[in-house]
Length: 459
Image 1 (cartoon, rainbow, N blue to C red):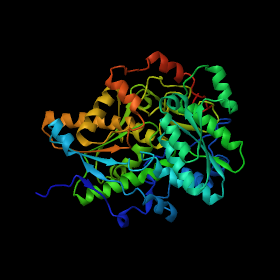
Image 2: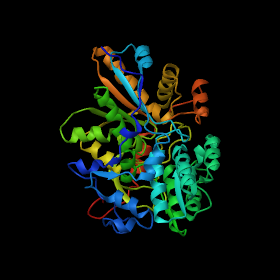
Image 3: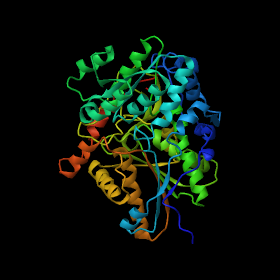
Image 4: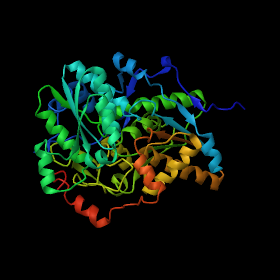
């Protein structure tokens, strides 16, 4: 039998020329965005003051199955894509499992992650519209780094509001963003009205993605020729990230393989939504029935312990309301949480698919995640991002189940990027100072009680 290669790269000519819009094949659509002032459903043009017009149109489009990837975006993709599909032979051997383990590796660019796939697209549409600047938030720093690269390439100014905890833990992320001429501010800050309000209400807070989003949106809507862009959660982001899954599926077809289990880390949903997109299409249309597993941190468990409800996408309550699995917009993860995936909610697309039973979710503890990360690094020679390591943990667990049962299943997981800016967290794991924080039911109930009321819909 022919041995499957360790790494398979598609050629440039084989790269996808279109993004896939998963909503076009969903039997039931995610609930629409709503105006927080009156609860009314938003129209596309209502988003124009916040997002680029083309991005707003992609955000609201649930019928166009495929979107052409602009030629300039394709050309920049070719700098680091296609990304490899890798067979984890050494990990399989270490686990003594009959399972076949594959991963799609997205770390071959300076941002060290998959985030560049959407950053390029969003910066391109801003340039096309004639905008001069963009604002955004970043948690662990991967999105901020990716967008800094893309904005530098297209000649657009960028302001990044970085979650204060990460800003302090990962100074080199800030340094890389500044290499690409981005302005980086720890959030919450005194630079915005909403930041000042959050600091008054929560003095000494280490911040959250919700806080940083509030500041970035305020900066965008109060600045000339400026718009806000987001690195996860939104429909448009999952659209751009579908290139991950499209490449992965095409590569597996070349190997005459198809995954029984597909695993992705879940924070806001960009990597997971992109990886599973074409496989979920098969599931929705009856062509195949893979198990799809979202893996989230036990310290920020929006899928497994959150509410499926309308909520603000930010802490300062300046964004539209989205129906999603959420812990509450005021939820702030513990400062001891080092693994990324810190957002309080989840992509409306993925939330709907999970709610309707098309996918599963598991929550894993931080020390278990880093245990898996270290094993993977030792066997596969890549130091994985903590976010990615959530998926590695679940992939290892599924492979060990195969060892117990004797079943030879094919597992595919998303290796979203590298962990070379996360050495403080790795050091904490290795010296035994890393702990596991899990919010109590009482704590989560407090945040859930603050969910917005929408008369006749959520009251």
